[in-house]
Image (cartoon, rainbow, N blue to C red; front, side, top):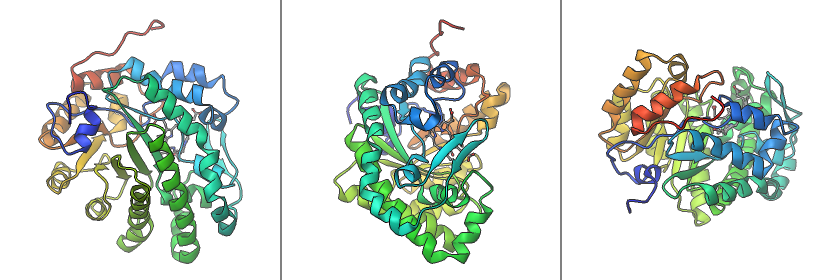
Length: 350
Ligand code: 1CP
């Protein structure tokens, strides 16, 4: 790969670099005042996501502020249920709400049309790619089918007890729902790659608490199917899988799903990461988002520890979960500078 190839892509191709690339899950939105200002101009969050100019601006905001190595398109994992015909909205201060789960047969008929209904996200990617410097990568994403299904089944964010019980009580129905989501997600990711996404991430944010056989059935098998479908469509960009909370099962995941990168959560041990690197994977993670919010010398020490334990192999510096909304910007700037050696830009308003 040439020197101008974005660091993120070099790491995902298996290179060990002089310093790892860095980006932060949920780096756009929430913690940035310029995002909150932009957000007031859209009627609601879903409308915001479907407005390419606004979503591109939100994607680029953290890139202007911090010397991050990758941007992630501003969108949400819950756009797919909306595109399949389930009502989705966000209650201010509370989070997502979903209407009644449509019949799976009805949703299966919507799969082809669903990708067209998400075309605004492709436009966002094209707009961002045209503006972003060539040495900074652009990441597209979708939710893992199981995580998206938990919201579709429960109608909101929860401890997922109802959805996990459903996996036992209604295995055929769940498998049918996951199959529809696999299809819609693969098409959506192909569209994203064709629109400028240079890496694709699957956010399986709620992979915790699953028995091994269930994890294989509802997380591993759908991810494998998505990657195979995307590859069958001729898309070659690297994948990052994020089975958050999978614990020891992440090794099983890494062995079976042909992703290039495995994103690790906060609990991942140094040895686990090193074993995955030795097995041919690029690893990403795993700074505690709570420590990022707290800051101080404990944050510096943990950043140094992560760099020391994982920089000997292909590694992407990141969090173990998304930036929390009340995270001080100075803490983000400090971590990015510690990893890259480059300071954040001073913003006019501060
Ligand atoms: O009005 C607002 O500003 C809403 C806040 C918000 C934002 C900024 C939501 C609602 N989603 C997003 C953007 C978003 N979501 C991005 C792009 C921005 C970035 O990463 O920089 C991404 C990648 C997501 C992914 C996402 N959405 C996940 C997976 C990642 C994770 O954090 O685990 C999940 C679970 C969601 C669902 C979701 N979207 C929004 C909320 C409040 C939730 C529910 C979270 C929960 O159940 O706790």
